[in-house]
Structures are given as C-alpha cells and as structure tokens.
Image 1 (cartoon, one colour):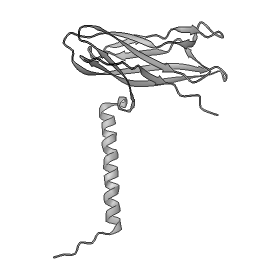
Image 2 (cartoon, one colour):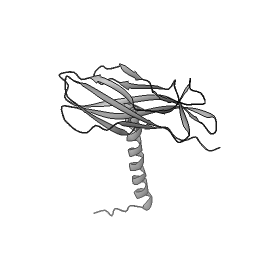
Image 3 (tube, helix red, strand yellow):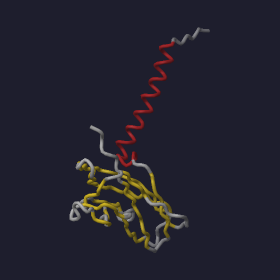
Image 4 (tube, helix red, strand yellow):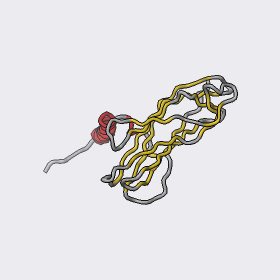
Amino acid sequence: MSNVHRSPFTVYRRSLLSVVSQRLTVNLLLLAFGPTLSAPLTGVFYAQAGQNAEVRLELRLPANFALQKRSEFWLGNPFQKGKRLEARATGRDWSNDPQHYLQSFGPLLWKLQIPATARGEYPLRFKATVYACDESLGLCQKHQLDAIGSLVVGQKGESQPVRLEVPATPKF
C-alpha cells in the first residue's frame, strides 16, 4: 500500500486547470456561435401559424440625447435564412435640427408573416447602428447594438418588447 500525498501545489494546480478549462469552453462557445450569445434575451412574442405577427423593439436613450435619423435597425427573418428586415425610427423632431434628429420616438415595428407550418420557438436577432447625440455636450456617438428576442408560435401569451439601451456619454 502506498501513501498518497497531495501537496498544496497539486490541489491549486487542479483547481486552476478547472477554471482555465471552463473559460476555454466559454470562449469556444463564443467563437462557434458568435457575439449574439452575449446579447441578453429581452423580449418574447406570441403568434399563431398562418397569421401576421407584430414584433416591437424599444430603444432607450439616456436623458438629453437625440437620435440621428440615419440610425438603422434590422431584424433577421427567422423564416427566411439570411433575409434582414429593416425599420426606421419615427417620432417628434428635435427643434435644434429637425431635419437630422428625433427628440422622441416610439417603438420600432416589424410585421412577420408566420408560415402555416410553423410551430415552436424561433430566435429573433436584432441589430442596430445607432447614432445618439448628447444635446448638452454636442457630442455624437455611433453604437453597434445587438439584442435577442423569442417568437413562440402556437401558444398564447402576453408579448413583451425587445429592449435596447444606448449607454450614456463617457465622462472626460
């Protein structure tokens, strides 16, 4: 019979290898599935097969920010791989530059035709290029944002919009 002696270094090395292994697994998942894994699931929509569904995205800006009208919003169509649907923000113009900026705006809307054969849950991937301007500083920023929602076909429930939040201007 042999005596097994584990030094503190051996225990530390094993726990360190476990942490490194877990981090490597997470990094491999991010590489395999892309950055959309990091976007939070923020909304769910319920629809019936063969009908139209309305999908909503709420964009939240910090106080005293205006949205540039050239901002772009897309939804990947879950029923037509590779097809993106576009939406534009509409609302009340910003009085200082009404041609280019919105002071306030409503949710962005997309209408999806649900195939008659669709059943189950479908991921909704939203992408946005948002130009937001801090009115008090006169500083504009470009943001690339992602969000994920879910479309549930064949069940009834209360739909919740997907939300995107633009971060505030960094302090200098």
